[in-house]
Image (cartoon, rainbow over all chains, first blue to last red; front, side, top):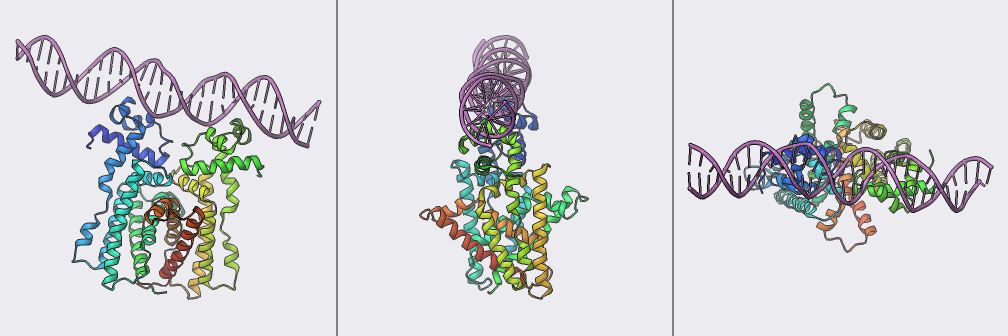
Length: 209
Length: 209
DNA sequence: TTGATTTAATCAAACGTTTGTTTAAGTTTT
DNA sequence: AAAACTTAAACAAACGTTTGATTAAATCAA
């Protein structure tokens, strides 16, 4: 499915509003106003508010999957380099589409069925499988220690990033970083997160109890 | 402020519904029906839906703060033991009040002002300060290495736990654990999370790049 | 090229329903 | 008797969605 300019306009306006106020907390009138289109256009293009949400996941779904395949198949990289590249690509992806990821976090919490939940489950599994391959490859080469709980390690990467994403305004205030511009602040926390996660993963992949 | 039985009944019904469907996604009629009280009782006791939410944070707010003081002041424990106890108490607290913590996660995402946001900010800072003390105490004693980014380490503990909390149904499905009862499953993931986080923290507190 | 016809896009207005809240009349408790 | 509680009914406002008219562009027939 492809969407024209106006449809994308609506989807991206809805994305921002859903991220900040939730699905139920956003009215179609809010979306229409924010997107600069007439109220009826949302039903006209998408059928319903619910289907607009599904279109949003369809629209973003393509860019969601990590480009892990290319990392995995690149034989010039060491296991450590692969993990580091994975972390940087993941952070970039999350922060580039912040609003959509907040919407995803919200959707994950409500464990209802439906196409969106399925898409999320599928995405999680794909990323998990590829991540597992990279770690296990490193274990076979003797770069990483064995006995790692890979799903939990993944939870840490995802969870720490989500935590920073959803509470960045608290972090900014607690560390008196209001003087920085939005861009500067984002650049800073991305850099810190990247360095921190790399150290963390290396630590846990090499730590012997 | 103290609340009578019926008020607590309403608060706890609202808690569960807010956690699963969000604040805006839950109607006062849903809450009334779920709590088994008349619709008007919510306005009668709390004034408004918004104030019910504030009462919820007031009601739970007391139990929120980690009992870190007692850990910190206990001189019989090593730094490692203190960190381990902290992790177990944190996990217990989160899982004991799952619904409320989901509500908190939701509220954290919307960066609006108001008494709730303030209470969250205050709670975060209190916990951060006490956690920092425990880590720094360990650093002075030479048990932990220096140069740790404590706020980010805290983000990992909170983020990993939140991630498991909010996506436990995905984890359950992906690992074919539907045969377990709800209680058994919860016990299992709490145990795994505890062991994992303890290893993780020890790894990062002792890892030398 | 002209004029007719179809198609897609846009709009203000209205639809019926659900929303949070209030009312006013009751009942129970103190 | 007073205070606290409980209720069904009603309220205006906001909600998602539909309608019917209007516009503009595209397609076709002459």
